[in-house]
Amino acid sequence: MNIYLFDFDNTIVNLPYEETIEFLDQKESLDPNLNFTAIVNTKKDYTTSLNYDPDGLFLLLSNRSVEVKKPLINLLSLFGYGFEDHYLINSEDRNKGNRVKKILEKYPGCNSIKYWEDKDKHINSVTEAMKDYPEVKLEIIKTV
Image (tube, rainbow, N blue to C red):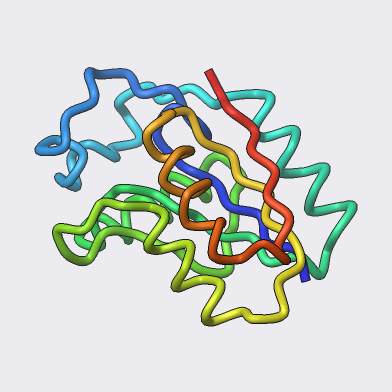
């Protein structure tokens, strides 16, 4: 099984405001009237991957809090994205590598992960976590 992980902020959409944890954890930060713009290359990769590997597992890996899950899913839908699950923050742990480990524990048959992300700190934490899973191929697509 192949897993496709997508970050949200500045990976799926360009934020129309300055990124602060305090604001990102507010439902107002996902108001569709805020003029979000899609990142075209990510959408193209998502569609291509979905068509190429319809049995793949498509997941959102975002540092948004679970409190904004509903408006986040709504905004994703407006941009034509659908994910089988959403790995968001439900505690103070903002380490994406820890959530990737939980994903791999839940899906032990995973052969590869393809991961779209814009921030080096998250790429580094996922890369570090994957050292515990040398049998799983990791491919990172850094968005700008």
